[in-house]
Image 1 (cartoon, rainbow, N blue to C red):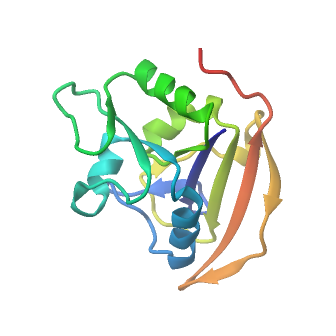
Image 2: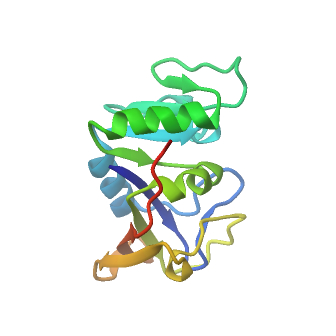
Length: 170
């Protein structure tokens, strides 16, 4: 199974100046608990945004960098979208693979995901990078939603969208 996991603001914004919009301890715990001991697929900028640009503990990382000279330690390095998708497909046959960003990676993999785990924040984070609005997307259907909860100063809701027309990776 291939699953995108992310949070966004009320306008579907997901980032600003190459960083996250919010500090959300409950959402971070959800992300950590959900992805722990699984495969995560991400772009190079997302990897570089992690503390000390190091992979997250207890996860297998597939990292896409278009620069063939950029190879990072303790990750699976790929340099084309085709190779990235093939690695995702290979791992997804055995276990869950989580797409964790950034925006370009989300956009390029969205047709292939089984579902999207989205934490929606009821706030305008003044984003400069956005996720496709799934509420208006013909291929996605909202199937599960939590109650609205407080996470620090923000109201958040955990939503699960399913892809009704998932494309298979060739």
